[in-house]
Length: 459
Image 1 (cartoon, rainbow, N blue to C red):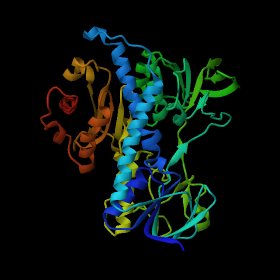
Image 2: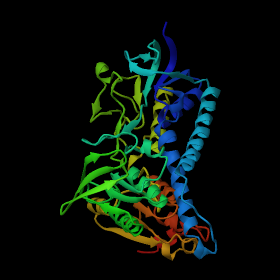
Image 3: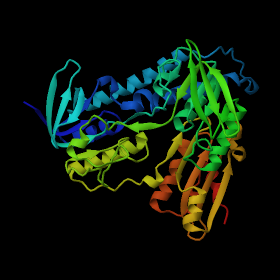
Image 4: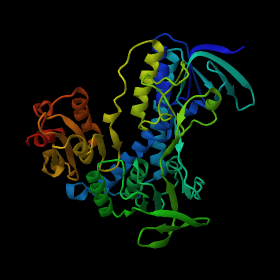
């Protein structure tokens, strides 16, 4: 006999487990299905947000230690032990995963291991590793199966010489020469890590600039900083692997004005991610999709009334923070609550490189196209007391706001703690506040946040 629940959730990443907790807290019987309990927390917790940020912090500590002598600190810094750094990152993921499992248990959420497939609008078939098939019935179903790395035609990852981001977190040694394909957030973050660890990094991007989705000034500034650190940047460029040996890869790098052959100790594919929507039986039920992503309404409901979706399976920003919000909305739809829709236009785009990048709202060209007469203002870290005192002078904040109504349209930050500072501006945009609401705050001194005082002193 099939097991019955109020809600079945396919996937245990940020969208899946957060929806399960909210529904469990509201006394719904919930089952979460994923391939293994080791995947609890999803890509974000196990091979993305958490371990990558741990490695980025290690890279920052290592870089600062090597440059500490002019600060009066003489340290005998040896080469970084990348395996130990990876083990520390893995331990952070493990601790958080145990915390999530404890919460799921507390609220009675059942975790079922296996591959889930829709077998009707209220039924799931669960295939086990041992060949057994279980059945689950649920009044509501949430699809939260996340995403996976996008491949590149003709270049197949082998986990050693040609790596995905998952493989890069399990390196046993730092490659002397590393080719990174793709200059989105993933490629930028791993370029930061391995450059700090001592790799000679070549970063290749098919588009005309790094981070094509962020404000162009931020992209240009990051490019200058990366080049100062010795990262070789090729934009408007393509890559083909010519030969894969036992210990190196020969690649052909093509730009508009040159073709070069180069040998690398490792290649990292960072070409973005694609949704995990195949193999779920969505076609059989007629669930509407666009470009491989599931279509939903404002309540995260698909065209099948009792089936919902959240997270990377939707054509919305592929961030854990987006997934959390979408899971909240889907859960409230199931609970019968009225929830404010997600405000995607102000979703923070964040890159945890060194320096960090954070962006939300409209960029300058978008604001001018929509509103015409706008004010663009900048405040630079090199004029900030805390930045000078702590040797974090690279970067700036750029804001775009309405000249007459003084409404904030967009904010773009590159610099230390950018990913923390942006939320003050997002709050103002979401609330429809005038920029004076930020300018009138007495910011503590010395802080990076007080740069707001300089931003809005212009007319």
